[in-house]
Length: 182
Image 1 (cartoon, helix red, strand yellow):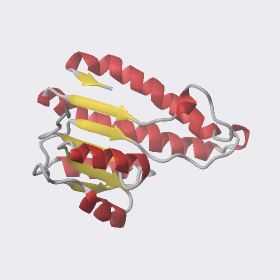
Image 2 (tube, helix red, strand yellow):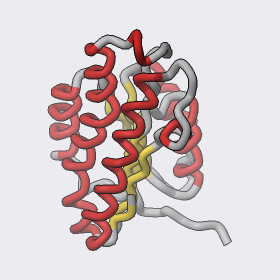
Image 3 (cartoon, helix red, strand yellow):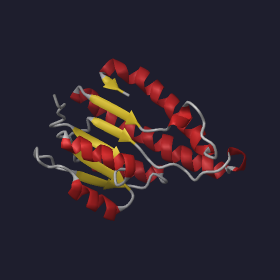
């Protein structure tokens, strides 16, 4: 049996390449309407044409740069004014530059924290109330195996992804009572 996501809407971050794009393509094959999220409009337009529309899905995109959490919030709030809600949120974004943690600057930590945790939190805060109302919510946070065992030369990434993992567990505890899985 193939699981259908017809009439569901998924917002997929980092959806123009790699894991995010693969997830967006698969969810569209399963009947989901996709809202692609990325900073590159050209890649968003190209990916939009690759999504499955065989079940009548209407796909869209939102161009935002996760290096600017204020812009993410403003653009998301504006975008959502014209939407009935999102059922599935895929938080996914690329990692920071590599290097040993002992050489990492404070700015690298702040920038990565904003990109990976603060922007994810902005998305969740904007979307979970409607998920409760719709009676369906799935929040999937793509992180890294480094949350179990730190990877060499990825000091900042290892640290911030660990924070995202803890945040995810806390969200799961808080939102589970509403039928939202994290």
